[in-house]
Image (tube, rainbow, N blue to C red; front, side, top):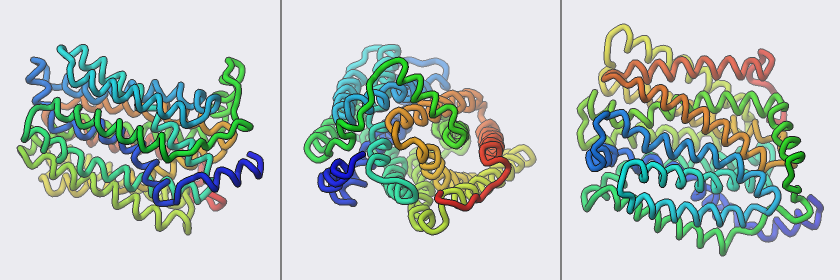
Length: 411
């Protein structure tokens, strides 16, 4: 980027607080689209006459699969046409898909609309990460992503309660009416306030050769590939939890209407971790923070699994406490893993964001569905996923870092 482009971008970008809020809103739309559904899953299951209870998990997984696939396209498109046009089209299609979910007459049409909703909402996720990378780099990028993630992660805390609130006044269709309105408001905000952060001089031609080169660069960069796959595996544990949380808390622990509150209390650990990360990463670096968190994630996961296997269901307070600690560690890992993966990808930030997002989300969707579909009335399958995926993620990072954790350097 030329000095003139850099100066023009600096003048046009909103102030830091608004910029972070804008990026957080874009990424939070995905969390909102997933977690606001959780209290409504039994009602959706009943309304569509689903006989097998585990089929309700497809409401989540179908969205995530569309979200993963969509990310493959929006990055290259944003590198070619610019960030803003791609973002606005994605938000517009998301609004249409939300309305389609609202009026779907069968479970199959409903799932198709959910897939389209995920496919469209990949644009805000990819563009948000690319825009942050356009504007910031290094530890400053990690700090911005931590602020973004802190706001973004508050959404799972309040979303189930919000969804439960809608159910008090009507049916699950109110949730999709809400998503429709929210997406239009975000669309208007971005259209008015977000500048184009990819100047014409930096745009890349959209050709097969260039795509092969760009994706090839992401795949062959050890740091990018290693941390992307590790993040996807660890994210798979979280998706397994999201898929089966309603069944675990309601069917295993009999929490009834307290489910949204308990789920929110556990998810609050993610928000706390993101806030802590903003304080630590500038001083300690991304690797030190995320590697320490990863070791904690693995240790707690193994202890939690051992309790379940050895003594049966952990008491609810113990299960909630250990799960919150797991999510706290996860909240320290994910923003840093994503930032480390993106750090070498400045020239192709959009395409690299597509690669990182698609691989991470695709792995998480598949692994999370695998864990969720093994729900058998106990918490052991979920805890086995946390422990097993934690160990796999740790091994991948060790391979990526050539056996050396807590590396000292710019990251």
